[in-house]
Image 1 (cartoon, rainbow, N blue to C red):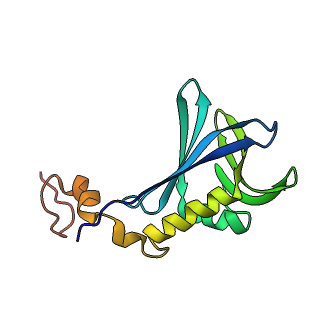
Image 2: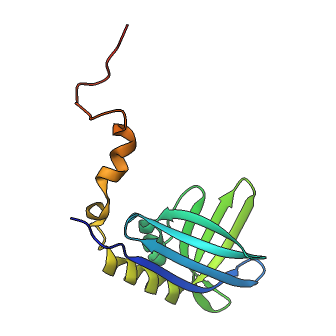
Amino acid sequence: MTRAEAIINVPFDARLLDDGGKFPAELAYRSTDPFAVVIRFDVGNGAWVEWVFARELLEDGLRRPAGIADVRVAPITHAGETVVELSLSSPGGHARIGLPRWAVRAFLRRAAAAVPCGGESRHINWDQELAPLTEGGPLTGDGPSISG
């Protein structure tokens, strides 16, 4: 069964928590990639930076500190306002970004309406995902063959 793709975008102003500067950002979700969320940041001059991470990490980070490694999410109070802190690390540096709680909640609510949590695998086109593995012919289940 083919489903129509749901595309969700929630724009908002994010804030650098270390210096307070605001900038445009957007959370994006596609039902054809149901486990992932994308956050985009306008870094000026028409350039945007994107990070992709698990929807479940954003859901967990709305309620409690979550994540390890390069992406961490946690609810915090900053300048008297409840925000969702997104901490991003890369070889190029580290940023602590405050996302408005309302934007994260609205985004997750819309994503769950499109693809309920726990039902993500039903929205994956498995034939398309497995095609690169089968381009050499059908899979037989016989394992690799050795020619000599």
